[in-house]
Image (cartoon, one colour):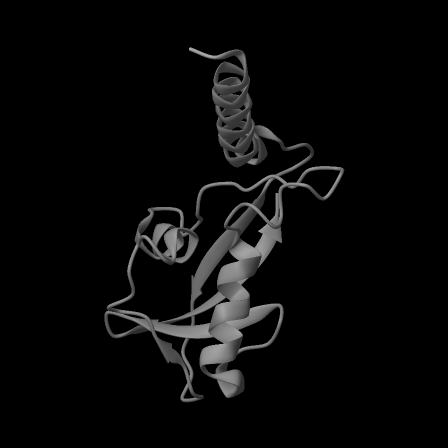
Length: 127
């Protein structure tokens, strides 16, 4: 193999490894108390977002909160440098998506959702 070809192959391999590391690294970053998505049952006639058929792949924190015994999702930790947020999915992303779906049923802090006939107030809390 020629020297130039070998150098090119090594450079491409290094770029691939660096990109894979950047993709995996943000999930390992995290400090401080975690954020959770919580679901509290409420009684209301106000508009709510129907989330009975949402995908667990798209809304893992929401589905986790609605189906867990303590009505709380798994934790999400932020990082001190702001590197993690653009690369990972967070409960804040899910709340933003709920606000866009039906603004009259959500604010930036809370949302009213309907899941399997029950209505819940969902919010991001820091434990």
